[in-house]
Image (tube, rainbow, N blue to C red; front, top):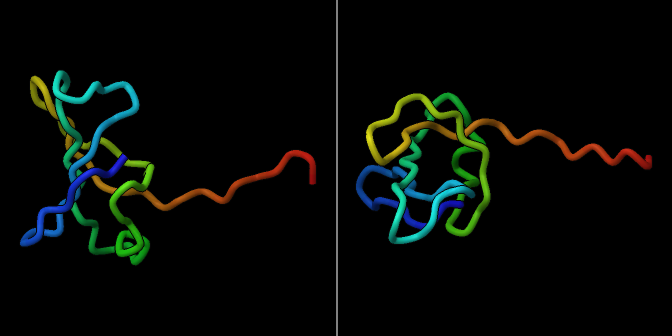
Length: 74
């Protein structure tokens, strides 16, 4: 979930579903200039992120395109 946006860099900061606030690290989401869907990201959004790097506490990645919801009943 995206929780913050860095005003000068445009980088989003969020948490993985498995991360606990104030205990675990953060997920730093870098802007991906090749994808226009990145501009639709906003605070509170649960987004898919491709993790590209990690350190002892934090993860780093970029947004991936949303996949269309497939309704199995249709």
